[in-house]
Image (cartoon, rainbow, N blue to C red; front, top):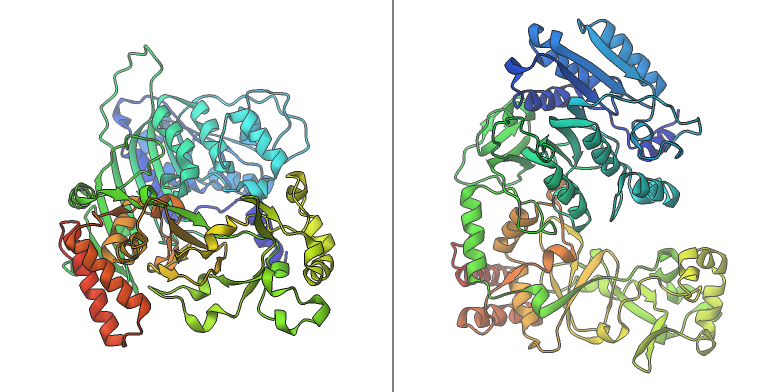
Length: 583
């Protein structure tokens, strides 16, 4: 099988088999929560068992006496993987095991007559027993890969809402299969911890489980998957009125992320693997080969609202955050609107650098060509000026009678001639037509009147904050966001926002509060995060000093040395405004 086909099939199925060391780590974390001495029998299920790695790791972690108590059940759609698992199980001293080449979600559906997710074969009548323990690494397949029909099927069968991923359905199905008081240990994407789209899953897990431990494995790259993994371990809540005594649980968390700088006051310990560092149980920095990681542990508590992310902060970090919030008088979302850039859904048609090279009859009129700010332009304070004028977007919207409308192509014959060359491609965007829009429209044009207003622009993904000021009326690309102040706000509020948002203090606040890093230390800057940034009182002397310094950085061209001095001054002022020490 060629490499491209392998990648495509992996993405479609969401299958990433669990490495042995990770499987052992998860098994150990689950087993340490069980009172094995009081258990006479124990059933352990992996609903997407692959070649059996997680179940075998669980078995290998048990003592011989406890192993004799256990029955292992694996379900897997891949027949070859099931055969491999069977061969591995028969060479290990497991007395009781059952492997089924079936679709776990199909088995668990509420309505038996519904078709299976991935197979055309008739629905099987096999019924799985409820189990004491589930250990799993279910597949991750997002909505756009699943397709609308599969998503509707999952929503109906498992009561899902929001942006559906296949592992969401597995979480619901596994919970149904678990006995009250049983333990679930599952490897998932860490996105559900912090994103707005994960709020439904957070609510579900908080309702169904007593949380034992959450481990955010961050950017450790412990297995071959595009997602950043997390481990959720929880005990299923007892049914109403059930009196089975259970030991109270104090939920804990652990997080690990690669650190380029590390904690300056902490000398990194040398470990031979990430797992050895995780097993140390200490808040510290560790070096593994040439990489440096920062690990933090602490008590975990649920936020007041399911819409809020699940923060994992130590006592010292929590105290620091509380000081920030006491000093803050407002948030960005209270004084300004954070918007995403335009989404053309046909960038190769609408966005170009070579409009001037086109044949004259296909060169769109200047009125509909607008400069476009993108990630490539992003820098602190000011955009990279040499790039600003290069890319332009054919902007297909205007304002008429105080309403946003598509331009009339009869008024722009050259733009019309250019767009008609791409009629088949643009008209094939069925969602545009179904929304009763013109075939040539940009899908998400935002508000044309606001482009002319002063605004802050920032990239959606960046290793460091890059909030910069635009007063040239540029349009913002979809890989960036932009901020325009509310009508009742003084225009200078943008300079205060820029000073705070570009600071090291707010970067630390972002990491602790939203904890949504990608690989190589890159951060996600989304509306739901940036909008919640705290701001100090803009009328104070300290805030006014921040505003003045930011203006000097934006409107002048200071030397590198002067710029660095002014940025250090802003850092000190931002820390002073929030009542903490400068970082």
